[in-house]
Amino acid sequence: MPRDPDCIFCKITAGDIPSHTVYEDEDVFAFLDIGPLAEGHVLIIPRDHHSELAAMPAELCAKIASLLPRLGRAALGVTGAEGFNVLVNNGAAAGQVVGHVHWHLIPRQTRDGLGYRWNAGEYAEGRAAQVADAYKAALASAGR
Ligand code: AMP
Ligand code: ZN
Image 1: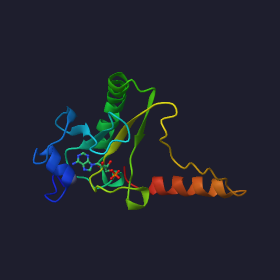
Image 2 (image 1 turned 120 degrees about the vertical axis):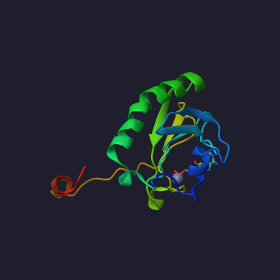
Image 3 (image 1 turned 180 degrees about the vertical axis):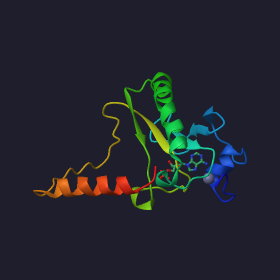
Image 4 (image 1 turned 90 degrees about the vertical axis):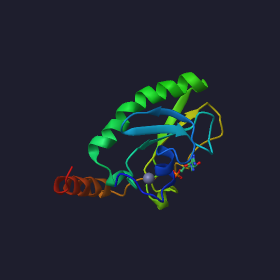
């Protein structure tokens, strides 16, 4: 869908809601997150309305991915950050609140207090092979 009239990010790309734009081209729009986790926290979105990553055309996703090194270098230079996270909250269970797919670009400093509960687990004997096989089968039968 090119644009959803009820979508806040579609309103931002249309200029109906103001934003602090940092980058735009014919397909992609990037602007400052209104509730930054760090100064310079940017949201990168496709201009067309796609609710989530898994529903996006691969080429459009590739275009956004191709911009990440450049936007990341800009984030480091502008904020003096030592690193950054690129994060997509995909689906409500994963913390997605705005239903227009977006990449968070979050500048990071050592000991900035941000983090993620990374509760690493482990596979039971044989389970990893089963899961990997299930992925291969799913990917073989799915379209691009
Ligand atoms: P998510 O939880 O991944 O859906 O993140 C949505 C993000 O959108 C949050 O970090 C919000 O701070 C941000 N956000 C919501 N409304 C606006 C807005 N009008 N301008 C900029 N960022 C926004
Ligand atoms: Zn939208």
